[in-house]
Image (tube, rainbow, N blue to C red; front, side):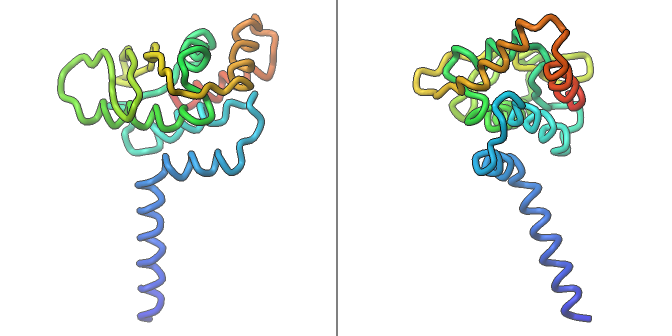
Length: 169
């Protein structure tokens, strides 16, 4: 009987640690298994993790399912999809949850800074990012974003990606 409670306690502890460090774990999983750049997996995961993180609608940052805005964030600002999508959204959400002023128009945390807009449901969308001179862009993901931006809706891959982005935010 005592061993089963110990095992249960260990499982609960591991689950709590995993939940608390979910952004770091997701970033490391992406680094180990990056997948195809055209899938924009870190952007989709970042949106999902913010909403699954217990913040619900209030005080969560998300990326808009808008190819032009994603292009402005990840193409030319020194911010890459692979290295920055998950941590940047995590820092934005932590900044929002630690502030009391209303409305919050910008964030600055963890080396990231940018302007925000708040939707009616309380979710903050990143509008633009301050250019980082030390950042590394992800050229393959940037090409995928620009390709979807140029596609006029006839591309099923882009429609599916947009749907996955909208599903969480």
